[in-house]
Every structure is written in C-alpha cells, then in structure tokens.
Length: 301
Image (cartoon, rainbow, N blue to C red; front, side):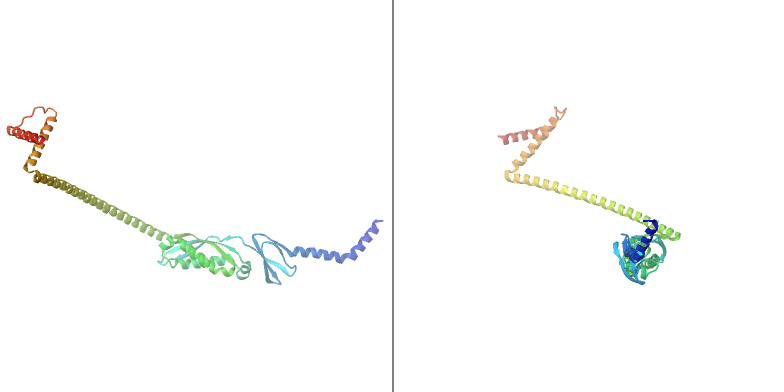
C-alpha cells in the first residue's frame, strides 16, 4: 500500500465520521463547562439568562452549560475594614475623634452582589453614624470608662442594619478616643485637682482614725483600771467580812491573835534581812511582842 492510498482511506474515514468527532468534542467541552469545583474559602453565584439561579457551595458542583454561567466568585473569608476616624460630640459638648475598626464576612453572597455595590464604603458610613449617635448620648467620662458598652452597642446596631446585605459582623472595635489639646489640658488640670482633694481627704480620714484609736485606747485603759479597783475593793471587802465573821464567832481574842501573828511575821522578816541580826526596838514594843508570844503560846496549847 502506497502513501497516497493510505491518505485516501484516512480521508474517507474522517469524512464519514466527522459528525461523530464533532459531537465527541462538544460533549467533552460541555462536560468541562458543567463541572465546577468551588474552593473552601469561596462561593459562586450562578446566573441563568442574566438572572440569579443558584449559589454554589464549596466542593463539587454541576451546572447546565451555555444556560448557566458563574457570574460572581465571592470570598467568604473574614475581612477587616481599614481603621476609620470620625468626629463626634458628647452630650457635654466635647469634640472627640474616634478610631474604629470592623471585622465582617459575607454569608449570603446573593444578597451582597445584588443589593449593595460598595460593601466596605457602606459599612464605614453606617459605623460612623452609629458611633456619632451613641457618643452623643454619653458624657466624656462615660465614653472613657464605658468603652465596652459602646463597642457592644455599635456592634449590635451595625449587625441589624447590614443584615439585608448578607453580611455577618464578627467584631466592632473602638480603638481610641482622642481629644484636642485644650480639652486634654483641662482634663489633666481637673485630674490633678481631684488627686489633691483625695489626698487631703485621705489625710483627714487618717487623722480622724488616729484620734479615734487614741480615744478608744484611753477609754479601754480607764475601763481596765476601774475593773482593777473594783476587784481590789471587792477583795478588801471580802477580807473585812472574813475578819468581822471571825470576831463575831470567836470574840476579841481572835482579833488579838491575828494582830499578834502579824507582829511576829514582821519581826521574822526584819531578822531575815542582810545585816539585820541585831534589832533595836522600843521597850513598849518588846512588851507587845511578849504579849503576842504569850497569846500564840496559849493558842498553840
């Protein structure tokens, strides 16, 4: 078989099966156009004849070739708007500059692409209005001290207003609240005055407490001294009552016996001292001691 005869046979085969080849190529192209693999971080918006038809979720999807087309590829990753600065006036007429930042993500792309053109610009404008409205209801001190409540109110109102755009607000932050130099100097002066006042109050309270503690100590000492005198008086009264009971029971002899006993004890103490072996006493004292020894002898017998 020559080369010319082979080419003739090939041309005859192609000519008789050209329709099948074209159909096969068309099917392959249609299959490639029908299959859509959507990444995990995206969603595809599909239109049919220019109208919204469906939203393709991440993974393997099939559409109708020619009739359907992927019109929008929307990222569903969380986004952060650039830091925004807007002026606001508090309820006590103080001008402040507020730095805000918003984090959001698209959860319904069919709403986002057909209801809003500039998502970032719309969110920035909405945040500015909300922040101005919220700060206008608060005094400057409240703005500084209740920043968490301001952030929560801003996030809540923003979430309600952007719901029709298919957007979820994940975070809304108030990064900083800045004041002009005049207001800042006035606040610093007020802060220093408040600190001085608190120092004076603390010093006065300390002095007052010191006086109170001193008075309490003196009162306690007086009460303890009174209690001691009361106990001593009760002891003396008890001793007197015992002596009186003894005199009533044993007569004058018992009293004389006690006096003689005390005299002897005193003499013994004088004799026990160093250098006191010789004791000089008056004659009437010796007579008294003799009577005491007689009485003691009589009691012992």
